[in-house]
Amino acid sequence: MKAVLDGAKGYRRLIPSLTALVEFEAVARLRSFTNAATELGVTQAAVSRQVRLLEDLLGVRLFDRTHRNLTMTKEGEALFAVVSEAMGRIAGVFDRLSTGIEDEELVVGATAAFSHFRLMSSIGTLKRLNPNLRIRLITTMFTADLRHNEADAVVRYGNGNWSDGTSYLLFEEQVSAVCSPGWLKTNGTPETLAELMACPLIADDPTSEGWLTWEQWFRALGERPGRLNYGLLTSLYSDAVQAALDGQGIAMGWNRLLHDHLASGRLVRVTGATLPMSDAYYLVVPHGKTIRPTIKTLIELLRQDAGVG
Picture 1 (cartoon, helix red, strand yellow):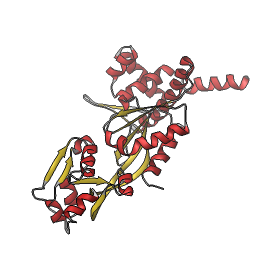
Picture 2: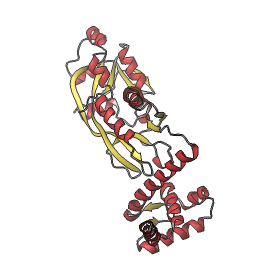
Picture 3: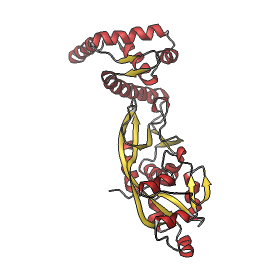
């Protein structure tokens, strides 16, 4: 008992104000003293005083304040990463104890295309491994702001360097032109990229997924595309892929995403031209969320299902 009491005294000495930490976490997460005050039900001046108290105690600045912007210093980022994770774990235990629910819930965010082509099969396996696991999928953009997101983990496409969470590499990507075997048999294989430009191309809205366009793909491969022959334009990538499966033309094939279709032969690469991408897919766990065993298992399943490892 003595050791416990001495430890508690030590914590009080090192962390003299839990209120200050709570208010700091809200400011850091929301990037706003005003929004933090609203969330906590206190005045902006009270929040500012608590943050100043922390800064005085630590002897460092936690935020760089300008007239329009509020950004964390490297010291603030370090403190936020630890405080948000600790509070998330505490909140999770409180929620479990207060509700009496032992079943685990996992909230995962991803774009509609990633959910359709990669996530669903991994989720099914995860459920079989964890029968009591409740999974909730939410549709997000690849660049969704995790500070205002309820997800326990989200899939992002990019360089992996994001300040609002911890990133775990899933797999890298390369992009080819793909079509159905039937279309290729009927129309023949384009011998050059110039011939490919004249083929009926299926395009999707790249802004919805954060990906490149046909024009960018051709330029990256050393071609200067003129007027491309778009046979079909879609808003969603999944619709573009379905059109290619139906033999309506040539779609942009994100190879890892379409691993199952390519492996089964339902889709084939039109030419040998393939563009390796510098960005990759990551599973990002927001600061304040626990990196649970189920999340680690999901990472491994996503890698395996995309033909990695």
